[in-house]
Image (cartoon, rainbow, N blue to C red):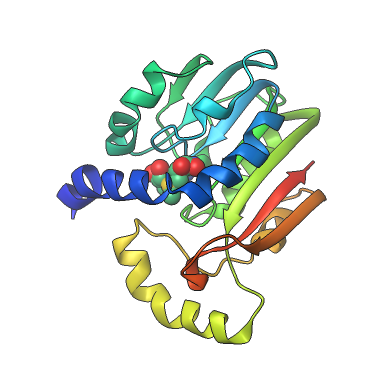
Length: 203
Ligand SMILES: C[S@@+](CC[C@H](N)C(=O)[O-])C[C@H]1O[C@@H](n2cnc3c(N)ncnc32)[C@H](O)[C@@H]1O
């Protein structure tokens, strides 16, 4: 299993998360980041090229998987902004209270086992007036799609590194102590069971 997680999964995630429909989503949210940014579950660094270097001081890239950090090599080299790695999970953010201006959460909340604790950590490290920018796939609004999400989820979780297909993203964010200020949601691609997304800003 370790071989799969460290050497196969990073390539699969990098491919799936780099598809054109997902890139289009990244373009909508990542340029809103400013100041000191904490990215939760940075993965292979697919957001990096969308940061506005005029607005971003640097990015803390929190990523617990060694395989994903290795896969990020090329994107790191080409990054317009400085990246400081934090090799811990989102449940244990090693930063002081009120130290980040932006928390960036893209396609990671689905995978974080202790999502409530992790959101509490994001809340803790965010400065007053700072913002949580999110773009996540989750529970679909249509009953037929939700049925497929439930059916597929047990197998999907095993092959996709623990990713939950049907997390109730807005509810998770609000239970984590944030107020959603602005949010859109829609199917952004196919298959529909994995492509209903929620994106926006919370504080
Ligand atoms: C689907 S990938 C998304 C990566 C990246 N955020 C993106 O937008 O491409 C999910 C990432 O969450 C990471 N992850 C898994 N468990 C985590 C945890 N407990 N805390 C933080 N990140 C975690 C995985 O290692 C993986 O890199």
